[in-house]
Figure (cartoon, chains in turn orange, yellow, blue, brown):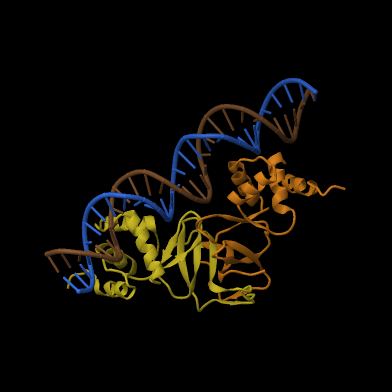
Length: 141
Length: 141
DNA sequence: ACTCTTAATTAGAACAATTCTAATGTGTTG
DNA sequence: CAACACATTAGAATTGTTCTAATTAAGAGT
């Protein structure tokens, strides 16, 4: 058995989402969803794909990230006005953000409780509540 | 008494912050700090200044917003990767963000309590905790 | 398999927000 | 009021992202 990862699960995800499993989407999907939760920027994923020998244009990386987000395979995290992060963890959770390095870490949504939130103003409803814990310094380990 | 606003308080703020009270900084300071809490983008403040007959370049608006932020006269709010908002309310508080219109509203920091936050990872400490309540729909009123 | 149709990919141009540059102007200090 | 340091400026440059129009590839039907 070689250590090449199965592509079937990603294939299935794409099909479910109504997205054609093209070579590019499969490759990006496997980079994203194989092995744990990840936080990526378009630029970083593009480079990673290149390094992995997958030829995919930056435009496609952007398209794909947005399509995956629309299909709830990813979620967008706004923490830094300079770049957009995408999170492979789409469950309810929050984030640590290491400002110095631009590194994101998940905080389990069930751990945190928020009390005293005012009601949504008339005519609106909650779309989502984001908690971002900004960290100074650098984690070691 | 004419209704022209006093410039002395802004002057004092600038001095305290170690910023020379130049014509531009005074004008922007008065636009920002006269009359209640505000959320502005650089572009919006620039236009507002023009309309008020204050000639100030966009570069200066950016410089000034950053200097004011460094001096804790303003605080930056990251809610939208497209543009940067600056908030004249520097006390501890959180935000409603109306995604459709890009409108921000303060939520008093004392109203909200967050429990169950994990400790900061080793080597880091909390710089700030931001709560952003994203709203769908449009507030009326 | 072959063809048709429709959707996906692409390179590069275009874009928007922001920052930089280097020349000019202005506050402040002595 | 001279001199210096700091501010301001227009416009160019940069960055992240989106758009465009042309090419390629996927899926359905034969």
